Length: 138
Image 1: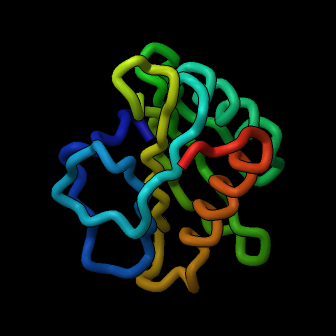
Image 2 (image 1 turned 30 degrees about the vertical axis):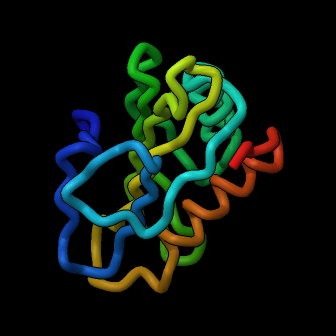
């Protein structure tokens, strides 16, 4: 991965091997599978928690990271067949005062047409882990 995903211009493929979560206030030409929860912390604080969480997973490898933009890319390796899936993530402000935030997360398989819900499960697990470590406000 050599550049960051632009969620505002993202065009998803027709194959069912992707999963997209968007904050309610982010407009994209691609329809989200789920709306992000709102977290009771700034985008910078949420980004740091995500970055730490990604680094703590043995089967996730942190790629590019931009702290100023609260955006990162990482690779997840599936346990059984060792397929590599790419995940893009960005923390956005969810309120005008910047005290709450939400995530855009796009997980997609590099190979194959079907992913047997691996991308959905990964993204929902990531969100559940974040919500478990800090209360979501919505």
